[in-house]
Image (cartoon, rainbow, N blue to C red; front, side, top):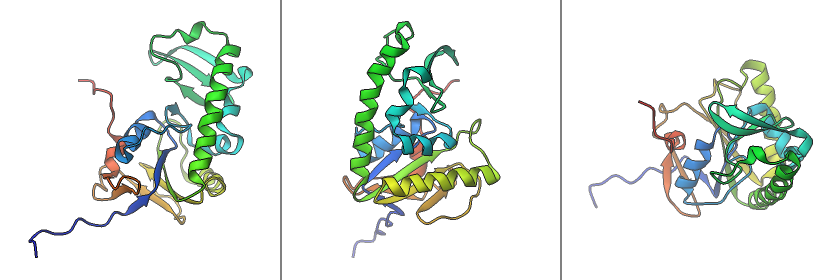
Length: 219
């Protein structure tokens, strides 16, 4: 027998990984772990937890009606789009270099609604079979604690059970919450040994991989 220990079995085994925000780093690292370029609605949004379930219930495209859109000339030094209905910030909806602030909100809506109808349909079709690992990273400035957090998670779980055949939910950097079947909580990097594997590619990663950013750190 070879004098090597076997690789430990993964603790999170899924057919796909889907980001629920709150930031784009989660989607970036989920794609790297899963070796997939498949996009889903929340990938590049800045999304408060309380708004995730309403978006799932109404559909992503419904958040981009012209009357609900606001252009932001300076969001932390960047140009952005704000959906008043969803309560979400959008930094990556248009190609780099395009001055989308010069567009009328009706034109912005006309471009984004078909895009998110397609992404929403893709999400629902994919989640109809197999196991889906949904990953949510805490937004410290927006996400609640205590009873409000439990209420938001209850509503989110109701939406996930309607959406997916076999949902799992990984909560990153949240305070302790009530246990729920299929729910995993982790603090990074405390749980570095917890593995994530996508069945479709058989390649694993660690929970802390999901928080590694593709943006260079400021010195």
